[in-house]
Amino acid sequence: MKVLIIGASGVLGQAVSEALGPHHELILAGRHSGDVRVDITSEESVAALFASVGRVDALVSTTGSLHFGPLAETDSARFSVGLNDKLLGQVRLALIGQHHLNDGGSITLTSGILSEEPIRNGANASTVNAALEGFVRAAAIELPRGLRINAVSPTVLAESWEVYGPFMAGFEPVPARRAALAYRRSVDGAQTGRVYRVTA
Image (cartoon, one colour):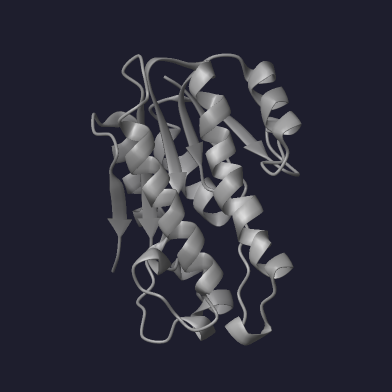
């Protein structure tokens, strides 16, 4: 299958590429690197991405920025970081991408553990991740032509613990290669409307 991976240069994206690479033809996309470039916050950029790569069998997104900070110091502009990037960016990939998938193709988005386990300074992440999971469940009942959509919800990655560990006391990280297995389940499996949770 031809699989388009957005966010392929990140820690998670690299692990997903390694998990899928031996089994599929990969097209790697990112904002600053990869086979093709894309800015998921731009409708025009996402449309240009799909015009460039043509039809694919699977779309995988491992990208998206969030705002972390005290709620008392968060204004709408800061909160919009996650809404416009990780949430709407991935929804945009799905909305446009569905028309460029072959019959029976799949979409896999990335949410995260904070949808179910909120932390201090993480209201933006919890909101965005929960909304993505709701979108996946709803979209799954409407997609035509046998198309599937799922989300992967990983806990904090071991490779990112130095950055996110201070926010996540008591959480146990997992290696990115383990989280990547859930993306393979989504791409190569048969289920739709699922949220694959990766925890320690």
